[in-house]
Amino acid sequence: MSQSEWKVPFVGKTLFQIGKDLRPKIDRIIMRHSVLPDQALFEKDYFPWIDVLERNWQHIRDEAVRIRAEDIPSLGEISPDHGRIAADRRWKSFFLEGYGYRRQENCARAPFTASLLDRIPNLVTACFSVLEAGCHIPRHYGMTKGMLTYHLALRIPKDREKCHINIEGPDGLHVLSWEDGKSIMFDDMYNHEVWNDTDEDRYILLIQVQRPCRGVARFIQNFFLFCVRHSRFVQDIKRQLDRKSGPPLAA
Image 1 (cartoon, helix red, strand yellow):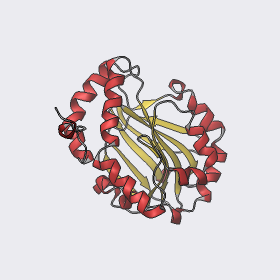
Image 2 (cartoon, rainbow, N blue to C red; image 1 turned 180 degrees about the vertical axis):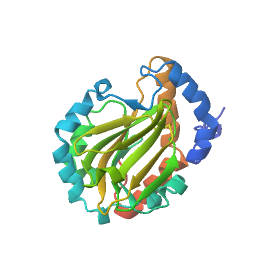
Image 3 (tube, rainbow, N blue to C red; image 1 turned 90 degrees about the vertical axis):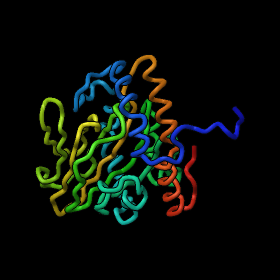
Image 4 (cartoon, rainbow, N blue to C red; image 1 turned 30 degrees about the vertical axis):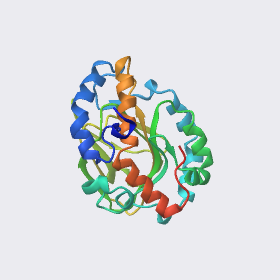
């Protein structure tokens, strides 16, 4: 096969198309070789780096809050592939890193947080996620069992009960409210839905990491993420961020 005939699988495809083509087979292999059980929520003891973030949460919070919500684009603006779930433009994301690309100009505005990201093994994405007053993220699920999602609460509305995430796990519905300086780690392949029914904005550090796996599953995870990195899903986000801020993402 000539070089011109060789193509990276799924380049130019949307997130939905990637998931439809790969996800079921990938997820079955990943869960056969997963170090962690198949459950919705995980204790932080599985991830030693969480303690480092929690000990430094106030410094992280200060950097996030200094970046005013007005300076953070809505996820719907920069990621058309998020479609329905990002229709509410009050959900905003300040990306620091994603799929092997580091947003250098954003990291320069949050240097302390960026330095801590370097200590997290198998990091996939990291951003400050702002849910403005009144925002609602509809029920949805993620991309693959090969990733887990982490939240570090930075600034949570005083009426915590009205700012919460519902996660539909195999053991029932989990209704969780964030607490300043505390963590939530979950498998976002379980349906979840988010509300901020308060008059204050919610700030968290949102991180995705690879699920700890053994053997062939680790290779498959890396290959899948390589395909996502070169997909239209990620490249569209990259182009939108480049357009808004000028300097390109650094590899």
